[in-house]
Image (cartoon, rainbow, N blue to C red):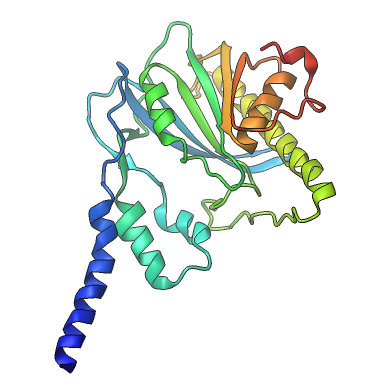
Length: 268
């Protein structure tokens, strides 16, 4: 009887460990519907007053290779921050059997396609605690249709912000229990995120004007858009109203904070 119970326990453990492996597809993303293949690159920008912005860029490419890239780059480093507090076994299952298997239909550091007038560009801003790769399915689709898409981590407001040297950008602890203060505090966070978007746009315009840059004359400065979800959507809306370079914004389920926006920009 003891042997049978032991074998049943072993079988149960094996099933629990392998179940995520079987349920999660290694290629869950649909093939992008556009004419272009998709390239992807990662950058860490230490911009004035905006140190440690981690950007993931998707872009149209002429490459003929059909190679998939990891959904999460630098998996161990990234998830070491995002999974703080989980048991070693839970981390193993999540890292290796689940997220570590997922691939995206894009090629790392593929050559950016040529464009006579530059490509339209979208800045993606994640919600509270969100990271730059969460909107991968949007980014792949837009890039395949000729958009440059830039997803960013907001330092201090994104989980998993780990720099190349191994240093960690700690997630800011925020107390929203004070109801009277909570809305003002959240609005301040949104404003900081909006400033990050403009800082990233400064850098993109600089690269677009730099002859030896891989983005030289690849961005159409008249077709700049922002988009985001929740606080990221609020930030994209706020940035669009304040930054004349941004043509349009998509705010997915985020507050508007009309008292903080430049009313002249609302029409966009």
